[in-house]
Amino acid sequence: MRKLCGKWRFIVGIICILASLYHLYTAGFGVLTPRLQRGIHLTFVLTIAFLLFPSSKEKEKRVTILDIVFSVLAFIVCSFVVFSNARLNLRWEHVTSVLPVEVFFGTIVILLLLEATRRAVSSALSILAGITLMYLVIGPYLKGILYHSGFSYPRIVELMYLLTDEGIFGIMTGISATYIAIFVLFGAFISTIGIGDFFIDFANALTGKAKGGPAKISVISSGLFGMISGIAVANVFATGSLSIPLMKKLGYRPQFAGAVEAAASTGGQYMPPIMGAAAFIMSEVTAIPYLEICIRAFASAVLYFVAVGFMVHFEALKCNLRGLKDEEIPNLRKTLRKSYLVIPVIALVYFLIRGYSPIMAAFVSILVAILTSLFSKESRLTFTKFIRTLELGTKNLVSVALACTCAGIIVSVITHTGLGLAFSSLILALTKGNFILVLLFTMTIALILGFGVPTTAAYILSSTLGAGLLIRLGVDLLAAHLFVFYFAIVACCTPPVAICAYAAASISGADPMKTGFESAKLAMGGFIIPYVFIFNPPLLIQGSALEVCAAIVISLEGVIIFAAALEGYLIKKIKIIERIILIGLGGILLFLVLPKFSPVISLLIGTVLFVGYMILNNKIIRTNLKENDTKLEQI
Picture 1 (cartoon, helix red, strand yellow):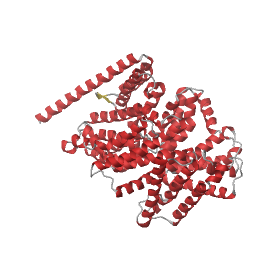
Picture 2 (tube, one colour):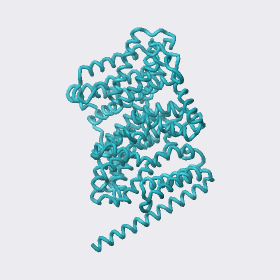
Picture 3 (cartoon, helix red, strand yellow):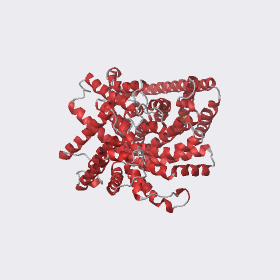
Picture 4 (cartoon, helix red, strand yellow):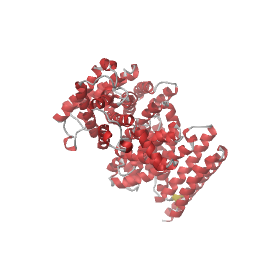
């Protein structure tokens, strides 16, 4: 993103502020009709995109004439849809002829969207969207599952430009223009009043003294900050700027320090109550209330951070890494005085529980955030801060909105050509209906898509291709969507791309690829969690309270055993054969065998194993500390 100055900073700033005010107004006082809501939204987003994002690194210092031309064209072609709304509402879809001006403007907006996506999101998503558009033309000349009857060029333009349930102004853009826009603004407001700093200080005060304290600070603060930001890379820079230097200072390898932050920040996208932009799309696609998605995903989200946290813990014990000194740790009592900053998040959850729509709940919570900021001079939202927050909110929205719109193009192509159904049939034929193989195929699809495109787009595409297949095999609707969502997220810290690892490596100074493999290892304990809730539905808060508790305790024990096996440490360093036994026995016992017993037996065994481990581990740590103290006294 360009760092603009002078007149262009002023111009872009004004457009961003107007865009944020528009989204605030429609969230609080009523969303417009679909074409108007989405048309105005995309007019702002596409116009700003060419001014904020350069076509190449060589042109990132100044706005070029080509950028201005593209920006003006984007304003014209998107505004045309807004001003033609009344006429377009009266036309018969797929029957009324497409006007030459509509074909011309439609062609321009498609090309502009692909270019803006290339600049602001990723080249991979832009290329993928371009290929799917070409597929509409060449499909009749292909054979097998790729064949379709074909589309004329005017019909392609109509599908992408003139409809409100498909294409550029379709449902995905609608979600971006309503749910995502207001929640991105909510994240901008609570970040401005200082909730991110509070989370970091709180995690620091809570775990700073523990062995490997800075790494545990990273895990906790990333989970808390990711809960309200929903953007993995932003999470890395927000919390990693403090935690990574601290880890390096205490002896952590640079790539491990970066990997901890990358793995923890990645999980932030799955953490309720915001869960990133994809959760709103999931709610719209599945017709499951957003609050229900948050509640049912909470346990599995916490388990991910437990898995990463114990990987960090075992690394600290194995390498005997100390915590922070007393003078380096914020005072917990003073830190808790700033706990009022969490009020907007609590308000959001409260309004959702009371039955407010997510849009209205976020709008009211923004007002609560503004009032909360008045409690202290340090957090007070002055007029200048308020304006900058509006500007920041729209800037943060641009990439997510373009990803949603571009993904909407791909989904429309898949739907209208029947490619999704054909793909599902192909996978079933290749796997012969083997459930485990289908899960592995679906996981692979989500990971591959997540390598090249942002999480939101990766979820949209992988759910279109994979979630329906799992549902056909009897998997619960939400479990199927959370499965693909989870792996679309984990791709952020998995090589060969591992965008979060690259961001963390830029702070730690380590090799990005080494950091990526290290972060994938840390997240590996979390890789098993989606399989757990597929085979053990109570983990998604389905069933009686006893069944849910048993599932959580068993899964907790399971991820700890997996973390120990992967890290090579459980009470003491363990050999490779012991690690294999732990993985095998832990997986079979905790995820396949125990769930078959009654909840009481499962809960009892899981509790005994976990409590026994904690007691033994604590005893050994104290013994080691006493031995170290004795050695120091002798010296």
